[in-house]
Image (cartoon, helix red, strand yellow):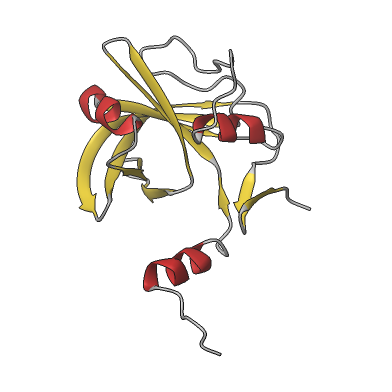
Length: 157
């Protein structure tokens, strides 16, 4: 009996699902078009100046809006917001519109929101690595973050 080995991409995907991460929604607006997308590739880069990075697939509907806008928000999801993550991950909930009407839209009910100006964009295979300079921060209620690990949402013990 012959067994097939996973491709490098499949093996890499299996490894990455073992890495727990927080869940964020990235949002941007350009000329009246508002887009949001669930993203787990988010990290801090620098404290001086305050920089973060997110990785956005070039084929994502968010990318052309974020690229033109030059501004975006990073919204950290709290526990209990699995529905929000799912909504912005391509399975929209009819009538659900949790983004604010601000120039840079933010997520209502976020654990925290970072308002960023695009500082640099780098190629990253199928993705763009977007470095944002944090210009403003808002904190929501003190609760625990929504986590994603091994293809499922998790909670801290």
